[in-house]
Image 1: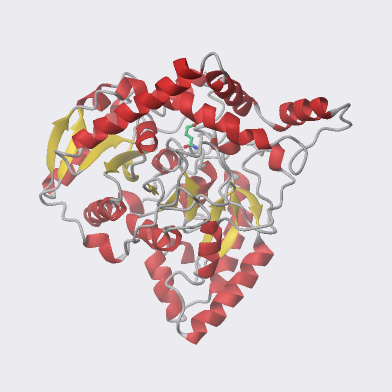
Image 2: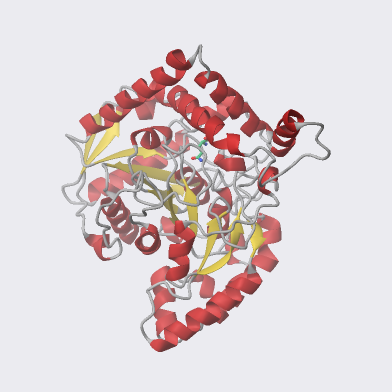
Length: 492
Ligand code: GLN
């Protein structure tokens, strides 16, 4: 079969179970595509061909036995922020270019246990700080829809790999939008779960109170399959919540769009940088949901202006603390010929970290320093609480909240936006992490340059099933999620 990469996760699962093709054939098919097409996209940092084939053979054996997991034998790509035993884990940084993890992240271990086949590790902004993937030490990844554009970030490699059909599904992480924004830029479905739903163990920390892993795929149905594997309590992550996990696949039709109350925040649609095409496509998608029986309710989210400053204090503060462990001593990059211990720290960190990471360490250290702690960090925490309360108040009256995922479509590679311009592009995604809520991106059309536009739906705590279900039903009535970039149509 030459078009295995066009099959959904459900179709792949059925095809494998009925032995229409083997997991080895599937892995070989994807590896061949990666070899031919990825040099143009540059989504992979590491391709684990040998291991993938061994895992595929093992999956084939389990499939023959007849009691395989639904995802056994299906390939996936991991964001290079998830530790993989025996395989390089870089977090997009020179600092970890030589780092081979001695253990698997829980997400990786769960995927392995289900029999998923790891194709490799995909590119990202260094330590997940960025919105374009250009901050990677390994260079920029291209957006499959326009190779001179960014795929978004920080999970840009995950998005590009799936959008170019170089992996059927991928893991991503979202601290302030890093699953939803690249999904939006690349025309994919991506879910940021409730904080605590997916284990952070072995997921390299950026801002621990905001970081959350999740699935990136073509459809809500595909995301649901991966969520069924990665969600759940983990004793190794103290912020993981011990709460029953939904069957996200079984629940795909569980929420009726008919009667659903969708909140439309006034403030969100008046943001200065909101592109006219993005606004139009998002409004059309809401109209469609209205036709399907939903009610649109105008709401207020009065804290909107505080999102960017609050996040860009809290996230760098946590980052400055988390990244203090990279000191050149036990693992990671070490400078040549250090004079003394101070020189070792200083040069290892200045040579090992890129500019954006250093900027954030400086901002965070400043905000946490004795004289400024109350004025910046404590203040930001108080505002964070107000942002959360703003959402909770809104959810008293609506079931979900709609927004764009990003104010624009994908930027040109090398556009070289200033840090503040770049940070303002995160306006629609940051608050969800500050409040710990789940949210999903769904593709809803294209702008005048044929670049994908995404709709974001924000749910109340633990509403992952509801969000997946709403998008699934939308995707039964529309075909945006089935559109493929020209490069994905290429055969290897
Ligand atoms: N773009 C945001 C940042 O640069 C969010 C990144 C993320 O979610 N990891 O911090």
